[in-house]
Structures are given as structure tokens and as C-alpha cells.
Image (cartoon, rainbow, N blue to C red; front, side, top):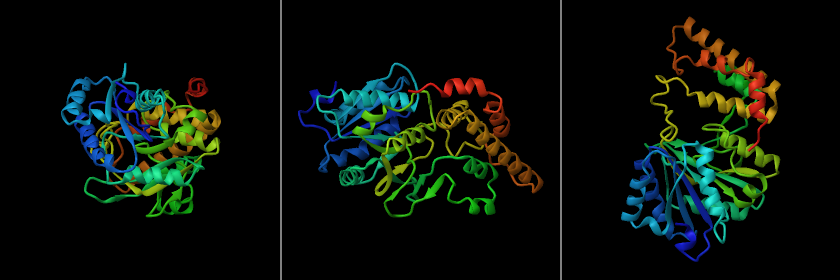
Length: 336
């Protein structure tokens, strides 16, 4: 069922939620969206079920709660990852007789706070030059997580590997994570957990790159938008609670015991090779790998516990563009 059969009123916002074994979280997210229906923003939610066997449960709960007038569950043909699932929802909304003005990508492990969606719409209505707007996050305990990001670079990769205070201060303007505070600010990219995209951006640069399974897809998308002269802004009046890692399976709670998944390395390599070329990707790998090796040596010498995922240094070097140049160059050259 599409939104055209539910209402003859044009929807300003299509909200896309990709579910994969997160049914309970998805339902909590939908519950948090329900009060937003009383705002001036017309919206419709598309839940894309990523072949995890939870479609029937989601549809039953949506109908039982009376949400089926503003939410639709559709099934993906496979678990293709974040970009693949979101693109299914975006294409569905683009097919409406009157496509929405904005698309909100929303993780299932989020809950929107009152008028958060309205805040993003109001901001984008005021700023026609802005193509992407991201929310401010809070943790489940209510503590602040006011972070947006700079694009990764060779220097930022060295800093991320080293984790050395004085060096981080020297290159603080290149560190990826930015503490944004409480005011609206332009930034390079915002977290895909709550990211609103103007329709004209998607029409101009295309959808998300489906060669990314998880991680770096929103970084890549924001960089493509910037190269097409669209701005990206952080909007702290839009507040969203985010249970970090629950939708990706890599949470802060278990990151010390589980190796980083292979798709993280693949996504990182794709981002650098695709956007900066194989030699810059190799420089970025050399910077991060060297910094990480120095960090681990310092930790071992000072007898500090290793808080990284198991085998991170080994797995990183094995996946590096330094050894896999031709293969990664071939993959990186393929555009979505």
C-alpha cells in the first residue's frame, strides 16, 4: 500500500526507517513519531524490512496501533545494508503522485523528541541553500551527544590512530568529530541516524551509494552533495535519542569483545579510493595504521588495557589499500 491510497494530501516529509532484527526498537521509534502528527508538518513513514523475518510482526503492530494511516511496511528482497534499504524507501516516496519535499533517514534505534521533525523542516524552509540537515542527539540517560563531523583526511586518520593528546590539539581543526554545542552550524556531514535531505539533492546527485553495506555511506553522500554546492547544517533544536550501535550490531557495550566487521574496512576503503583516489587512500591507510601501531606500543609499554576491538591492527593492515590497491581501485571506481 502506498501513501497515495491513504490520503490525497501531499506529504512534506517521508521518513525512512530500515529494520533488520530491530522490531521492538522500530515500534518504539514509531511510537515517538506519532505525536508529531499533530504538528503542521504532513508526514508518512516507510519502514523497510530488510529480510529479517519481522515484516508480519511489524505490519500487525502497525495495524493494531492504528498507525497504518501514516505508516507503511514494505519488504526488501534482501539485506542489502543501510544505503540499499533507504533507497528502497526513497524510491517508493519518489513514486508518489506528489513526491515529498524532504526525506528523513531515521535509525530504528532512535526516538524523536517533540517537534524535532518540525525543527528540521522549518530550518530547511528558511535556508534554500542547505540540502542536508542533521539532528542533535542525546543518549538514553538523557545526556548530551552534540556531535557532527568533518570529512576524514590523512591528518585526521593519523590523529584517530595515535590518540595522543598534544597531537590532537595541534590538528584539532582536522579531527573528524566536532562538538557542536547548542547553536546551528554548518558542518561537513551529519550522522545518518537522523538526517533530512531535500528532494532536489536526491534528484541532482542520485541516491545513496549501495556499494556501502554499513558505515561511511552518509559521509560519501554529504561529500557528493557538497561537490554539487549543497550545504550541510547541524540543527540542535531537532533532538533525537539514539541508542548507539543497536541498528548496526556494533555497540559501545560489545566493541571491546567483538572484532570490527569486515564491512567496516570495506566501507572505509571505498570512501577513500572512490573520493580521493588510490594513492590518497594508501596515504590515509599508512597514517592510520602507523598511528594505531604507535598507540598500541605505548599502551603495552605503560601496561594500559587495550580497549580496541580484538585484532584491530592486524585486520586493518590485511584490508589496507597498501596491499589491495588494484582490487580496491576497481571497486572504488564503480559509482552508484
